[in-house]
Image 1 (cartoon, rainbow, N blue to C red):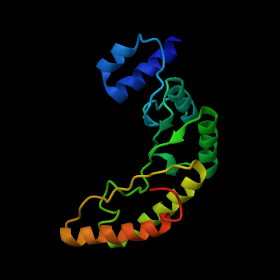
Image 2: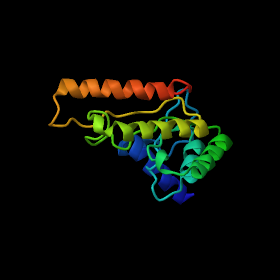
Image 3: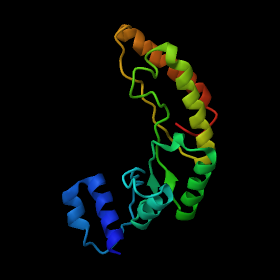
Image 4: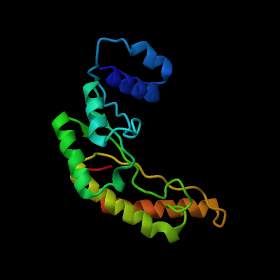
Length: 171
């Protein structure tokens, strides 16, 4: 039990800050939230994804987010989905495009093919986990293109991505 309390304390500290974690550490037990709060997989890195889901569910969370999801194989994602179903959890968001924090996402058209491949993979993942939404990031600005052109490039990439996603219930 002491190990479990330590894990929960780390989760609460990472989510809400150390003072909040200290305040609720002695609380009677998990909450049943009215909103779909979604802690992030990875806050408890020393535990497997299914173990993290179990802890989140044990403490009343019914959703989670996981930006690392696209790096898993379809078989691993199906196992995560099985655990989600066992726990009555739903998928929050994950970041679709791997280049989103660099200058190679949507701002420069020479990277659109990679971005659209990431969107295609996100649609495939959606078919497994049934997420309702996902996050894309435009990428960092680049110096060799005017800002107005970068904005146009982002809009064009998003239109093409929208065509891929429109047949799903993902937004």
